[in-house]
Amino acid sequence: MNPWVLLDEAEVPGDGGKMKLYQRAFEFSISVKNDELMNSRMHGSEDALAELACKHVADRPTPRVLIGGLGMGFTLRAALEHLGANAEVVVAELVPAVVKWNQSHLADLAERPLEDSRVEVRVSDVGLVIKEQTEAYDAIMLDVDNGPDGLTHEGNDRLYSRGGLNAAKAALKPGGMLGVWSAEPDPAFTKRLRGAGFKIKEVTVRARGKRGGRRHTIWLAEKKA
Image 1 (tube, rainbow, N blue to C red):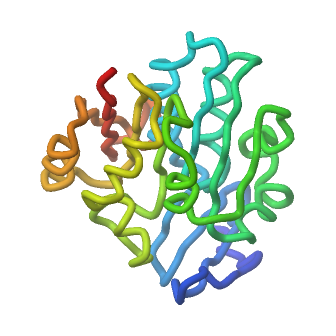
Image 2: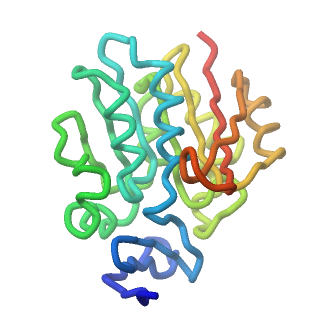
């Protein structure tokens, strides 16, 4: 078997530890503190996050969506495929190196989505971007860390708190959709979404699309019009 090769590493802002990019043959992996955050062979659930959230708003004249977490670009690519030519997609990525990797080592995995003219990249905490404007986005997708209960970076906790959910709700336009990805189910988070006043649907999807037994969870939380 081919060994993993370390391609690059970078510090996560806010004492989040080292983020490392590995390659093994045609497979890539990103980890933090020895926990794998993402693998290029398993992006079916990331694709589903974008598809489910964007389908809800794709028929709007000029949909504007926010993606929290660039990852390997799969969520962004799927969003672009399900939105029209007049869409605007803002991507907030906390770690500058992840943007760099998506422009180099990882660029071809998702067919170079950063080169699409509809995309704006913000090297920033998505929580701060969410709080910049009210009723600014038709959809917000959070693909940050390993989900509400799988944190490798403690600063992400506020995204999934009641305050974080209230901020996301304020940033959505009426009838807008908040989509949240998670490696595992989380009944407490489901309860917080309901408590924040969202109309929610919890979906279980395959990590590798149509293959494999591993499952991930997606919450679709609609802001009432």
